[in-house]
Amino acid sequence: IGSTMTAYAAAYLGEDAPLAADAVTLSPYPGFEALAPAFDAARRTGRGVFVLARTSTEDGDLLQRAGLPDGRTVAQSIVDGAAERNAGASPLGDAGIVVGATRRAHGLELAKLNGPILAPGLGAQGARVADLPAVFGDALRHVLPAASRTVLRCGPDPLSLRAAAARLRDQLADLG
Image 1 (tube, one colour):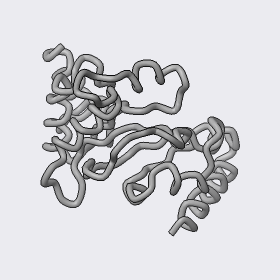
Image 2 (tube, helix red, strand yellow; image 1 turned 90 degrees about the vertical axis):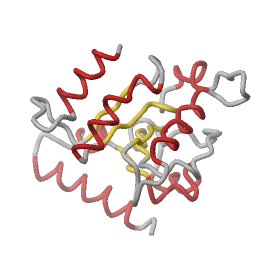
Image 3 (spheres, rainbow, N blue to C red; image 1 turned 180 degrees about the vertical axis):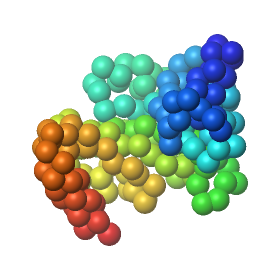
Image 4 (spheres, rainbow, N blue to C red; image 1 turned 45 degrees about the vertical axis):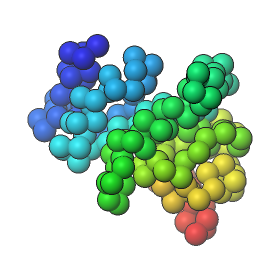
């Protein structure tokens, strides 16, 4: 897995990455530390990595809420792994997590994360902008809400897409 992750990191996060991205979303299930080449590349290039922790889909519940011998859930262990990588970073570390905006009772302790939270699920999956403070509490300032289908269904006209994105931006700005 190490050589594969190193190749993924070079392809998406490296200095001259042929598929350069601002950030990638990765699955932690090969093991959180197996993602180290991606975290290292992101740190070097100023890009980011989001690790699936508590997704917006119901199908993930069984695995993500499963208990570990130390009493944490699998999802919390992922949050803790990201927090460990982000310790001491300022203003935020480059290890983000994915927590669905639809997860009103996600059960995660996010206070020590010190990283961004990608929050899919707005709109088409049922979460509303007004739900975000209840879902994320004090971590709200680190949340990057995603509403892809809600915006994209207003296309393909560019003006309609811009208007939909602006409406979402304005709703988010009203959260304060």
